[in-house]
Length: 563
Picture (tube, one colour):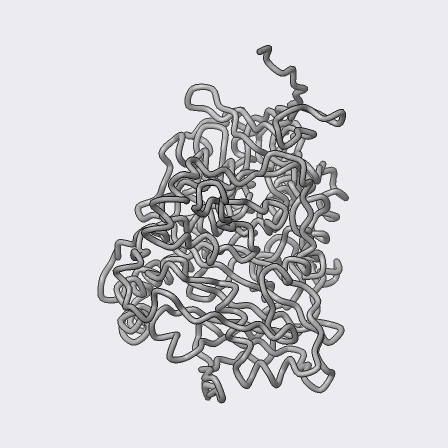
C-alpha cells in the first residue's frame, strides 16, 4: 500500500491546544520578542527575527472544549496584561463571599471561617470559554495565527528530537474506506512545539512515553462533573463561591463540590470524584446527581432550568507527579504537566503562568538559534524560581496524604502541611496510578458489590443519556471511533468477572455499554463514540489500561461555549 501524500507546513513556534496556557504563552512570546528588539541596541545585542507563531485547536471554535471551573486567581493575567480589566477581560463577578460548607442529606453547616484553601475573595468569576475567546482575539490582534478544527493526532520525532505534529485524517468511514470528503492529515513542523492540550492529551501522552519524561510519582486524577442552571432571581447571589463535601461520604473518599453564580441568574455547579477509588462501581456522574438531592441543592434548584452539562478530568498529583517539562524541540505546560493547585482546586492561573515562563525561554532559544534541551531547560529553571513552583510545593503531598487515608489527610497531615510549607509529617509521599487501587468485586463487602439502582427524577437528577444532550456533543457517526480498546475479549471475560465492567459506571457520558450477543450468550462491548465529551476518564480509570483516548476528526466533540 502506497504511502499517503501529506501536505506540510513549517512554523517557528507551534502551540498545540488553544487553552488559557497556550494562548497566554503565544501572546507573551509575541510581546517579549517586541520588547527584546526594542531594547536590543541598548543591550548590545542584535535584534531577532519575529517568529511565525501558530496555535492549533481541535474544537470547531475557540472555547468549545473549555469546561474547567473559572473562579480565576488574577495573579497571572495581571502579569500578562496589567490593564486586563480595561482591555475587557470577561469578568462576570468578583468573589466577595467565600464559603465552605459541610453537607448532610437534610442540612448543612457553614464554616464560620472559610479555610484558607477555599478563600477566593478577589478571584474573578468568568466563563472559561469566554476567557479563551477573549485571549484568542488578543493574540490575533498582534499577529498570532490560530487554526481551530485541527486535531493533533501524532507527535513527529526524529531521533531524540520533536519535529512537530501530524493532524488527524478526515473523511474516513467506519469500515476504513475513504469517503468522497477524505483528506489526509497535515504535518506541521516547528522549531519548538508547545503542548498545552490539557489533561491526558494525546500528543503529550506519546511524548512522555517515548522519551520517558514521567515524574517521580505517577499522575493521579479526579473527574469533574459540571452543570449550569438558571435559577430563580431570589436564589441568585453574585459574588458567592461555595466549596464543600458531603458527609459522611467525604470521610471515605474525599469527593467535593463547588458552586458559583454567573450573570443572567446562572449558577455553575460542579462535583469532583476521586478516580483512585477502590470501588469498581465508582460513578462520577451518579455522585453529582446524588449530591443534588441534598436539601441545600433542592432549595437552590427549585424551579430552576438546566442549561448545560459537561465533564473533564483534572490532575491531582501536584509537584511530585509533574513530568519533565521539556525535551529537544518541545515543552509541556498547564494541566498536561500536572500544574493544577489541587489544594485550592485552581489551575487556570497556573496554566497561564507556565505559558509565560515557556515563552520567556523560547525568546532565549530564538536569540541563540538553539531549540535543544540545553536551552529549553531554562523553562524548568524559571519555573523553580517562580510563585507557581511555590504553590506546587504547598500542595505537593495533598493527594498522597489522602491515599494513606482520608482521615489522616484531612485531619492530620494536610493541616500540618499548611504550617510546614507543604511538607507535613512525611515527605515525599508515594502515590499510585488512579486505576491501580480498584478492588475486584469479591474483595468488596457483599453489600457494595451490587449497589441499589438510583431513580432519576427527570427534574433535578438525570441519566447520563439525557445529560449528554446538554453537552452540545457532536461526532460523525460513520467514522472509526476514537476510543481504542486494545482487546475487547478482556472486556467480555476478565473485566466482566473481576470488576463488573466499570467503564459502564465511570464514563459520565454513557459511551461504554455491555450488550448481550444472542449468538454467544455473553455480553460484549459496544462503544457509543458519538456521546464522548472528551473528559479522558476512560483512559485514566480503566483497570487494565487497554483504553486509549485519541482525537476524533477536528471540530468534533462537546460545545461548552455557554460554560
